[in-house]
Amino acid sequence: MFIHRIELTGRFTAKDIHGILGKSQDRTARDLWRFDELYGKQYLLVVSELETINSSLLGDLQSKPYDEFLRRLENNQQWHFRLTANPIISRWVEVKDKVTGERKLKDTGEPELKQQRFPLTIKEQPDWLSKRAANNGFELLSTKIVRSDNIRFRKLIKSKQEMVTVLASEFEGTLRITDVEALRAAMISGIGHAKAYGCGLLTLARL
Image (cartoon, rainbow, N blue to C red):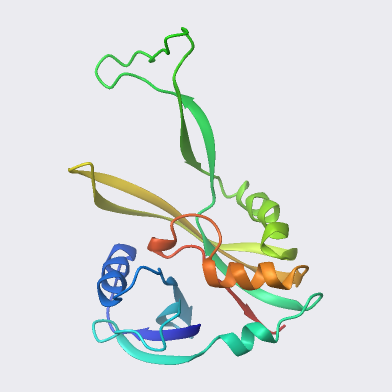
């Protein structure tokens, strides 16, 4: 694995990056990425299996191997972390007829149900991350939400252009590693949904 940092030369949306990275990679694996800001400059951070990526449309590229850093991680270590994630919850809701608005029923007379995703409030989001910590190999020692934005764009869904909204929240804090293999997997594969639009990438820095 490799980690790439691109100093962006212009303004790009999440949909722009999704399109650029998707078209530039001749493979099925999906990169993890997020927008970062450092000393007033805008960067794109990408974790990829490719040693280099096509950044000609974006800006100057810096790349380095990621595997060695991942191998140095050990249980009980404490790190500063940053994560951009899509904090949502799935709930069962009744299906309604698009024309009449009446709820649809099964042959048994029971209402037809479907799973629907709902964005969480700022107050609910820390608990969302805390509940996912153990399965991803860490314990939260502290966390704060640096920003929380709704990303809106049009997407072709079933031959129709529809407006899509993705909640992207940036978490920062400290963690302790409890299962280093699970943490490595999370840092490569991401946490949560909406990875194609800049969510899911967890990175660590020394305290």
